[in-house]
Length: 104
Image (cartoon, rainbow, N blue to C red; front, side, top):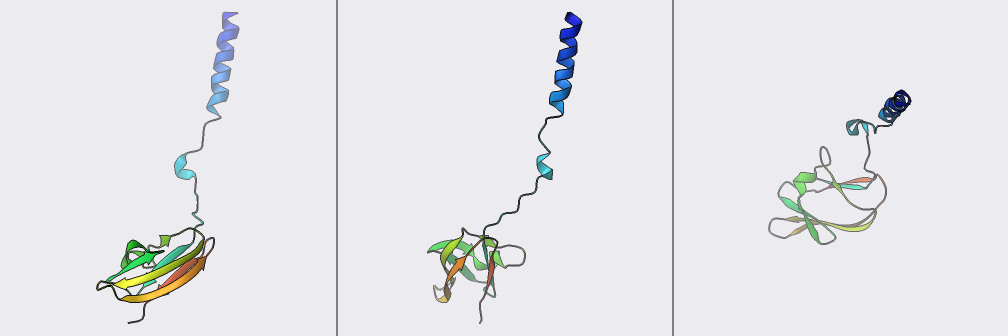
């Protein structure tokens, strides 16, 4: 009887070992939120819906973009002196990336 219980425990442990979760490093999830990038505004700040997101150069559209929720957004790029370089209302949906080009 002891051998049967020990055998069942060993078999159960072996079966449970096969039910482990996959390695987290192997799970790839793509963020499907829309994104905004800004080109040509090195000393300007990026505002979305009235909130400062940081320097526009952070979100150059090449290496970095700003992820936003789907929907309508007021996007503004302002120079250091507060002058509005660009003001645009955008409607962005899943996986859309909008690159705003600031003309000098």
